[in-house]
Image (cartoon, rainbow over all chains, first blue to last red; front, side):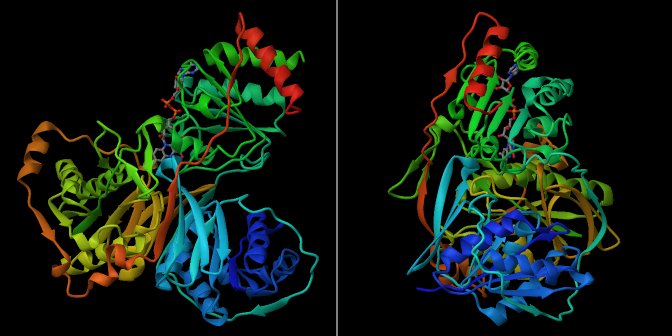
Length: 322
Length: 268
Ligand SMILES: Cc1cc2nc3c(=O)[nH]c(=O)nc-3n(C[C@H](O)[C@H](O)[C@H](O)COP(=O)(O)OP(=O)(O)OC[C@H]3O[C@@H](n4cnc5c(N)ncnc54)[C@H](O)[C@@H]3O)c2cc1C
C-alpha cells in the first residue's frame, strides 16, 4: 500500500541537516511509492529545498521568509498544520532535536493524533506504521502502532542511512502564511561549537562523577590532545554536569546527546542505563572504572579495572610512544 | 495565584539494570522486588520550581495532581510535604492503561475544572516511558503557551519567564499567563521535606475525582479505550557484548596492551 509522508526538515547555512537527509531517505522507502514531501521554514528554504529532491522528496513546501527563521514552536506548528491540510500525509516525521521534541507533540495534539518520540526505527505495513523507541531509561524498547491518523514520529539521528536517490527534480511550493507566537524569545545563547562536534567525533572520551572534580576533565583533555582533537571530543555524564564540572551541552545520555562514535571511552562513569541510552550505539566501548561490577563493563568491548588517575596518564604515555 | 504541579508515580528509575524485568506476554514491567515506586524525578523538580516562586511572590496556592492508582497518593504526599497546599488524585478504572494523549486529556480537563489556574508545572518527561509530551499536550489542549525543558522559571507581572536548555545552548523566553512549563534537572535538586513537613502533609486535603466528575469526558476517550498509540511490544534489547578485561602488572602494561588492541582494530 502506498503511503504519503511529510518530513519536517531542518537546515542551516551549509545545507539540509544530515538527519533530515536520513529522514527523507527513510521516508522514500516507507512510502512504497507514495509521495514524500518536505516542509522547510525560514529564509533560504527555497534554495535548500533543491537538495531535498536528491534524497527522495518530490515536493517541497517552503515559507522562505525571515519571520519563520527563528524557531518558535507554536508558530511553526501552525505552519506545518497548514501544510498538513494541503498534503494530508499518513505520516509526519521530525528529527528528535530541539525542534522536533518541541514541535512533534504540539502537532500531534493539534491534529488530534499521536506521536511517538525519539524513535530508533519506523516500519510500514498494510496496517499502517510501527514505531520503536527506547523507554525505561534505555532498559527497554517499545513498539507502537497508531490507531489515529496522521502518525507522527520524532526520529533519532542515524536511525536511517542517508542515500541519494538519483533524482534531482521536484516541485517547490512557496507558502504565504502569517502566524504569531504567544512566546517571545528574549535571549538565545549558542554554546560555541567550534572544532569537532561531540556528535560527529569518531572518538568520544567521557568523564563521570568518579573523576572527583573538574580537574579530572583536564586529564581527559590531555588524552584528547594526544589522540588528536580532530578525532576525539569530550563528553560528560549527567552527574558530572550537575556538579558543574563540565558544560551541559556535552552531556551524553537520555536527556543529553546521543553519540554513535567508532570508540567511546567511559572514564569513571558507572554506566547507568540512562547514560548508556546516549552511547550504546557506539561501535566499541572501553570502560575505565575502579569498580569491576560497574554496569559499563557490561556493554564494553574492552575494560580496565583501575583508578583513572593511573590509567589515563599511562594511556597518554602509551599513545605518545606508539 | 494558583499553580498546578503534575506528578506521576513510576517504577524507580535507579533500579539496577540486572533487576529490570519485563513480562513479554503482558507487555508490562515486572515490579522489582523490594524496590518501591517513586515520584518521577523531574516532577519533584517541577514542584521545586513552583515552590521557589511561591516563596518569592507569596500569595500562591499550589495543587498537586496525579493521574494514577490509589498508590499514587504517595507521590502526592511527597509534593505536599515539599510544600504544596492541596492534592488531587484522578483515579478510575476507566483511566487505566492510557497513553500520553489520554493522560494529557484527563489532566487538562482537571485543570479546566479547577478553573482559576495561572501556571502548570510538569517534569520534562516521566522517567518511565521517557516520552516528554504530556506537558506540551496539556498546553495544546488548553490553548496555553508552553516552554519545555526549563532550568529556571520565574513569574512576575502576569508573565512567566523560562530559561530553557537547548541541545546546543540556552534560551530565555517569556509568555503570558496562564502558561505551562516543563522543567529539567538543570534547575537543581528538589528540596528534601523535614519530618515536621511530612507530618503536616498527612493532614492536607487530597481530593479524588473519577470519570463521573468530568462532564466533558466519556469512557471511550480515556484510558485503554482512548489510546491512540497501541503498545504492540515491550522488550529488553539483546546485548551481545562480551567484555575483555585488560589485565597487567601495572597501569602502564594495561595501557600499552589496550593501545595495541586499538591499533589492531584500526581505531587509533
Ligand atoms: C530520567 C533520567 C534521565 C537521566 N539522564 C541522564 C543522561 O542523559 N546522562 C547521564 O549520564 N545520566 C543520566 N541520568 C542519571 C543516571 O541515572 C546516573 O545517575 C548518572 O549517569 C551517573 O553518572 P556517573 O556515572 O558519572 O556517576 P556515578 O554513578 O556516581 O558513577 C561514578 C563511577 O566512577 C567510578 N569511580 C570512582 N572513582 C574512580 C576512580 N578514581 N577511577 C575510576 N573509576 C572511579 C565509580 O566506581 C562509579 O562507577 C538520568 C537519570 C534519570 C532518572
